[in-house]
Image 1 (cartoon, rainbow, N blue to C red):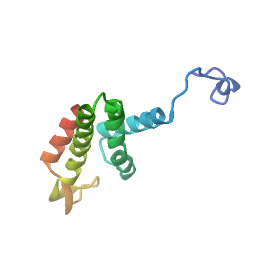
Image 2 (image 1 turned 60 degrees about the vertical axis):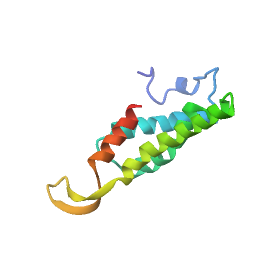
Image 3 (image 1 turned 45 degrees about the vertical axis):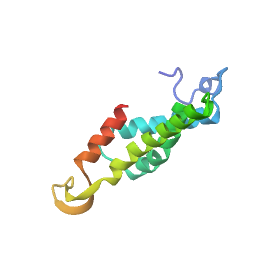
Image 4 (image 1 turned 90 degrees about the horizontal axis):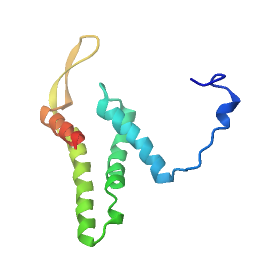
Length: 128
């Protein structure tokens, strides 16, 4: 798909007339991570760590309370940011004691197993 291959000199000559500001760049990175976490089959720690930090930023970036017309609108947008953030974080805190099964077929009992109610809440928030 690249004439001359990946190491072609024509790649380094690409340019664009538009630039992204710092917030838009971070929003793009966090959105990619959000899509990855929302569609993944197994949770990996490194994705969850970034996901934890990306949710408040993405909610704030999408709702942009700083551009509100008055104080009432600003407060509602801030409450929406808090609601979205809590709606995503609470399902990870709703855990219990249960049995898990490893890829090799062994099973054991452990704490921290996600409950069905937390999973359902997380799916509902992702649909919003």
